[in-house]
Structures are given as structure tokens and as C-alpha cells.
Image (cartoon, rainbow, N blue to C red; front, side, top):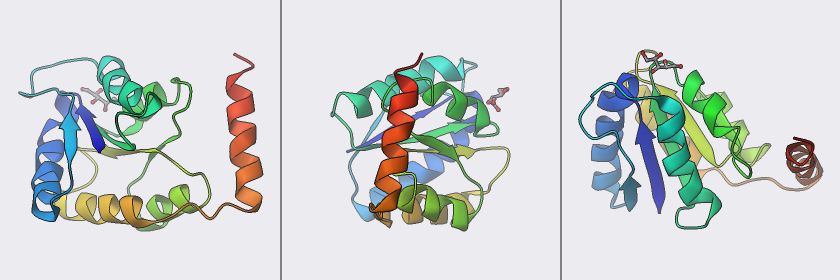
Length: 146
Ligand code: RB5
């Protein structure tokens, strides 16, 4: 199950990505916003990321104007490793090396075509493990310093 959330800056792109997930038959839960009305990306990030942390969802796809604000919010949530991406290399290696569990996309940065490619790469690239596991464990240890 994929968790989706956006603010108004990412609303249209989220809708485009939903169409793609529908075509693929991939299940998702959309935590809003549902109408493009102005809302605050930290609130929206929390709704979707809580679902990942508590196991209701496997990964989150998050959208705001830049992808950055919602990634900052998501990375404040314990257990979330979020990456704002606008190129395929980053989308691939944040999965392979960082075991990212949230992809953040900017509705004012990337078009729907690229966003869909990035989503596919993100969803289909496995974590490599090995030496990267130690580093991801150290990310979790940093969370405990807060
Ligand atoms: C909203 O106008 C915009 O600031 C927000 O979507 C996002 O880009 C913040 O990082």
C-alpha cells in the first residue's frame, strides 16, 4: 500500500501520479489534500508518514511545490527517510543506498511524465543492503539523539 499526500503546490501532480498508479493497479491511500485548497505541507506529510511508520503503508509519495518542504517535514518523523528527487539517478540510488521510504516530488519542478518515471524507479528499485545497512542504521541512531 502506498501513502500519498500533498499540499496545494503538489495537488495536480499527485492527481497525475494517482492516474498512473490506477493504470498499474497499485493500491494507494490518499491522505489529501483532496481539492487543491491551500494547506500546510507539514500536516500533510505527517498523515502519510504516520501510515508508513505504523505499517499501514509501505512507502509514501509526497508532493508540494518544490518537493523540498514536504521532504523536510517527512524527515522529522522518526522512521522516515525521505528524498526530494527530480532526476532518475537520485530516485534510484536513494532506494539502493539510503533505503528511502518516501519520495518527494515538486509539482512546480517536474512534469507528470518525469514524475511517473521517478515513481516507477523509486517503487521498483530494491535496497542494496551490505555496507549501506550500517549507514542507514546510523541514520536511525541520529534520530535518537533528538
Ligand atoms: C506552497 O506555496 C509552497 O511553499 C510549498 O508547496 C512547497 O513548495 C514548500 O516547500
